[in-house]
Length: 579
Image 1 (tube, rainbow, N blue to C red):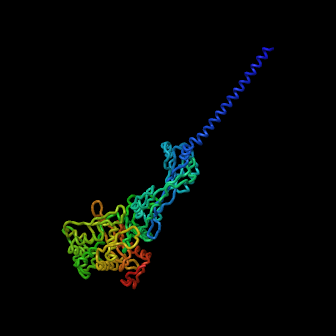
Image 2: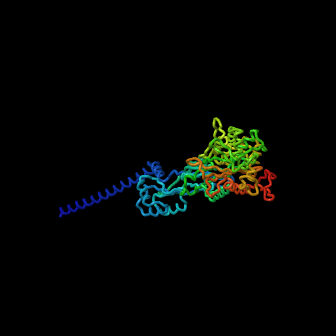
Image 3: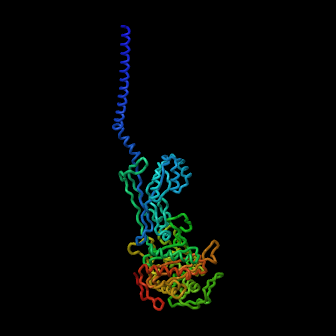
């Protein structure tokens, strides 16, 4: 009994010891875990607090770019010609996207993307954190994309250039690329001036990359500078409409029309055909990008005769009553022959211009010499840059041989063997219109009076304007008469030059003129390329465009109409009437 009792006591003690040991072990483990957690809490909140805070910020706080919108381009009255509107750009972080997920089908369809190509790109750039999906879409489309709730697909605000006047001002204003960098026209010429400076800010983002809160502004965005052009949008629309109509009516290859303020040198309108829409470049033809008024050269033909006549009057050898014998209606220079439409016989200087006599003007050129004519051409800006600062300007050719041959003097007198652009021709007529002052041409609206240089006497320009009036009233330019206003100008018809020299059946029809003739407000040049309707003379094709454009333009500028008596415009009694 005593042995059995001893055994029982020992077993009980053993069991009790094991129980105590287990309890102690569990308690020890528990205390150890609590201690480790406590230490970790101390470590996180005290020892590594700064490090962890920075790491958290790196994952949630980002530096975002603040896009700066490009400066507005407007016409002389403040009408917008180019503006930047806010849009959204859809981008993706391929490292966050499952390229096999079904929602990508809807995304591709929504963005107009090829689904297979989209999935392939996401796999190809799986290690990247940024790729564009679709740039500069409307905010409504961006909202629909966000509703798909696809991890790794985000949107950000950018700006898109928009041109309210579309193709009407395209050749002057130009356009930008998708990054809003100027590519053509004034957008290119003044790209640095128009470009803004992006800003930066710190933002708080959620785990889907969405901005929750703006934290601090690092640098504010600086918008681009505004640019106010000399263009009058009303005249621009008018010129575009009439030029487009004549090109269509005569099945012409193209055309150009330029209008200048004769007292400032500002370009009021400048249009071309063919044209393009800068807001939709899907059908863009490269040949339509050129601003032909500045980049394309042509022989001005008979439009140079009044300037040759000005050189003759300036020389002192000729007076208004001087007569020239043009019989028998042609003149030979070796194998080269120049002709008039008929034998005009003995005519005065005004009739030489009004009837556009090649024989008469060439005889004057032979007498005064090629250097005298060339000198005046040069003073009027022919063969020189206009200084307008437009990209791609063509200077043209003004010959200067060591010794002038008679045939070279003759062709120079009526605008062959040389080349100009439409703007240079308009500048030359501007000097005749304003009394002999050459102003720098400008596509930017001027502040204050321009500084000009006298290059020809007022007397000579007055006499030449009288000849130009006769061209419109009784000569080759009768169809240029602008309704209730008097006008003066000169027609020109020149052969176009092809790969093998002059084209026998293709012409450029030109009219250069001014109105009102006694105190001109506007100078305009109209040139139509290769009309195919059967009519091709400057007086038939270009002069009527001048008539319609000038009549409406003067009314828009509030120039007081001149009186009509018996169907004929009374000359001189309202000289200088202006709005």
